[in-house]
Amino acid sequence: MAASAKPSNPIVLIPARMKSERLPNKPLATIAGAPMIVHVMRRAEEANLGRVAVACAEQEIADAVRVAGGEAVLTDPDHPSGSDRIWEALLKLDPEGRHDAIVNIQGDLPVLDPAVPQAAFAMLDRAEVDIGAPAAPIVDEDDITNPSVTKPVVAWEADGSRGRALYFSRATVPYGPGELFHFIGLYAYRRAALERFVSLPPSALEKREKLEQLRPLEAGMRIDVARVDTVPLGVDTPADLEKARKILEKPRV
Image (cartoon, rainbow, N blue to C red; front, side, top):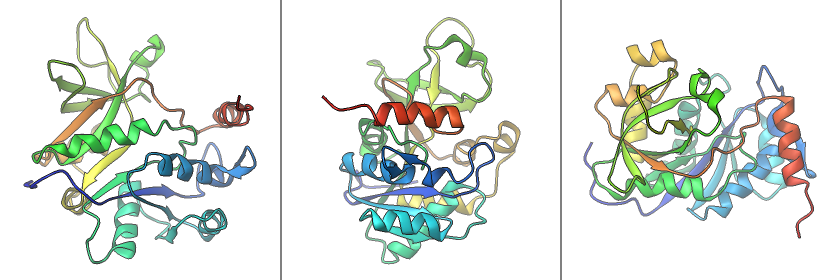
């Protein structure tokens, strides 16, 4: 997919929905006196990449975001993925096409380091790159064989700071000695890349691995991966929520 330069006017979109099997209504879970989705919005604002908006599946989320002074847009609650949700939100928020890139931050990352979305967006500095995303070295040995941890196979450049994604798997790859990486599901898309991505049907490998990012790879699109230091805490369970509360409720010195 051709592109002339690094995008100059990105928008950060945060997909959020109330439905969660392990932690119902988690966007509105209270952490340090505010709903979790508001904390995620603040982390996105701290990244200083541009306009920030929450793509909401339900009115309750939109209300919480607006009370906190944020921007929210309602989307179809039945979208199959966050990517489809942010595409609908983008068309509603920017039908004129002014935003030339979209940074997709998941709505369950209340303690996200702003450097992580910045690193993903930085991957779009090369015209041939369609999508940027981060990954961190695996430090917990249990994660090596954990199918919930997605491992990217990356052709790293000489300095090890970035590389081209060749494959993603829930299996332990690549084989042999060397670092393994934990892929972080946070993406920076060129606008044309996101439009193409959501227009494609689920691919064979995507359905087999249950990994959405294989769809653009199978279609010949390029994903570059940025190396970051740590994997952000994702809040999926009550235990994760308590961890986030301990971090964000800790008095600042």
